Image (cartoon, rainbow, N blue to C red):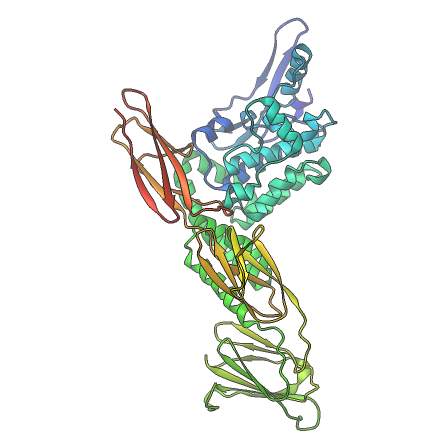
Length: 540
């Protein structure tokens, strides 16, 4: 009766029911012209995590409505989610599986049902609440975006043991396209302790909506987006690829404009997992690197000194202001000649921290100020590079610099000693003097990073270029899978490397099925990063 009262676009509607003691029981529901989510993803894996997020957003909206009516689903899984012909997602079987499990438990003494989607507290016999459904929604989201379940085993007991331990591969490591923002949503939903998950499914709804909004998929347009996807998955994914690259590139640029460098790097990282050779994003990351190198931080200059920084000559002299008050005179001209074709004169109190635009690429800046003046001069070149100059005789303080790498890497400083592994994706170093850091990826490719005190964030290295395989076959009824995923005969398929891949070689298994014999034709191959290969079937 409680479930029959639920009225929501994403919940299977119940019209009538009968539960006669000792007789047959039935439930009359709306008819769904479509297939289960399990059937769909088995036939065609989802290429972009954003699509999985849109599907689970609809499921979470259905659960939020049910939870508001004090109903716990307790068996959220792809088999209980249907896709209507018009793309509408329908969650079904509220409470029915609970009754069936209790009956079987009494008869067999075993815990049956859907072990792969159970929460740790369910496995351990602890009390269940709405956060149990949050965990299950997280598992389905993991499955849709990664392409496999987080907890797998040879038998149900092994699966239940792994769920109780709650150990699984980080989704961002399993599929680099997931990115940090969606990865954090999945990890929070799948936290081992209920207290560490979303307190309510509505919070997960808001998190998914914000993620999709950033991806250029407005929450109120999700039903229409899914309708187009389910009607023509291949063409939708191709169009989505272009939309995501454009939207995320603009989103990352906007974050840089608001000094959200960490958020920008996350978004740019998502772009590169879709399009590793994206020139616009790579140019932005390169510019960030060069800009960080030019932010020299603290410079110690005693008396009259000259220091070349990034191609600019910065001169600091002692000279009293015209009225005895501390003033700053700024002159910009040729680096050697002192010619005044591009000269700018400014005189102002030093505490006003003047900002000067350099008019020539080889410009020189001369700063005249009292020795005890506290002046911060920021020089901005035409290509937006900055050089910060702190007052003379300032003490150098060590600063922590974070170097973000986009794959498994190692490092060494000033070419001394052996390369040391970088744990995770961020290397943190304390810097008190100028130094050079070599970053080496798993393919032994190195990139140099120049560090100075005062720098904060640097991006280094790039992920391996994806490999591509084109399966071809003369048999008209042939089907093919690549690493267990269904592929199209005659169409090139790209395969990306794991961000933490230890080798630049990727092993792939191509399996053709078909022909008169009905046998399979298996081709194990190995490709180096960036390579392409055509694989032909041998079927009779």
